[in-house]
Length: 343
Ligand code: SAM
Image (cartoon, rainbow, N blue to C red; front, side):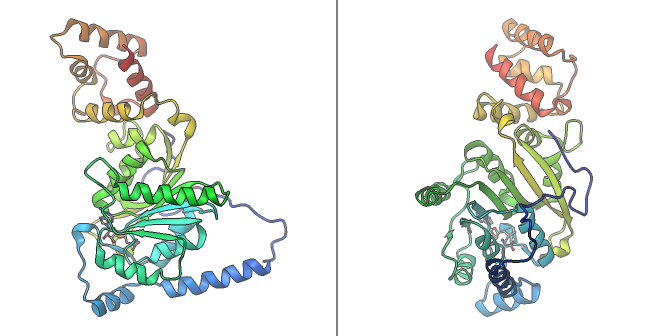
């Protein structure tokens, strides 16, 4: 996996250049757009004071078990939006609408936004705020239907957005942009990569998870998620966010992470669900020597066939007998799994 950032960066590592016109003076259209955008962002201003007032007016009590930590640092909300680099024909999925502070911004740049909110009280507040945004479909549901499946309501809302875009003769990307609820961040990203791959994902997650998402082989955080993401995406930690960026404050740091799908690397994975399961099975036993785990998966050490199969695999890849899964990079894992399943 190519990891562009390491450690705990405070600033953007890589500048993503937008398309530029030769003449830098704004057109009438751009002026109007910029005025709208100023007006919209002023209307949005999701500050702690704003949220406290709103929630006390409607009698809303925060449910921290649902990861209800709202982003109140407006500069960071700007950074999230800028990093996502949304283009006019893009379809954006947001998981966790909250009060729609981010949704409103996404709607200004995207062709359509599908935003998901589990909490019906927040869904009502968000709908009020989005009354004029006719390119937003807010779905009041749990994004997951079970541990390892995206809700069919989410998938059909995305299908619908795609149909509308096709009918309008437009082509664009599918992006995930969200301040993700920590409780579902891993399954949402994993399942999207399995069944509905995004071109890019720009998300805030807990720092620990950001570290796992971007870890390279040998790093202490490297695990099944690092391999699953690392085998098909370029990943980058854009900014570490202190607890004070949110209200209420979480106990730990968070980070904005950007993932970019690399189609040619994804195409190397011969069977995505099989590879996903293989990696997770291996990392259930991450502290064990890989060879033992592979022998078990192949039928157990009492099976002479399993042992010789794995011996051949080790010869082919020139692996040391005592190598552990955490020191094997994602691309090697892809080839290893392919050979393992063929043998
Ligand atoms: N987007 C808002 C912001 O940036 O301030 C809110 C983000 S807050 C971290 C996460 C949101 O996800 C909350 O509104 C929470 O109710 C919602 N949520 C939590 N679990 C969810 C789930 N399983 N499906 C959909 N939404 C969920």
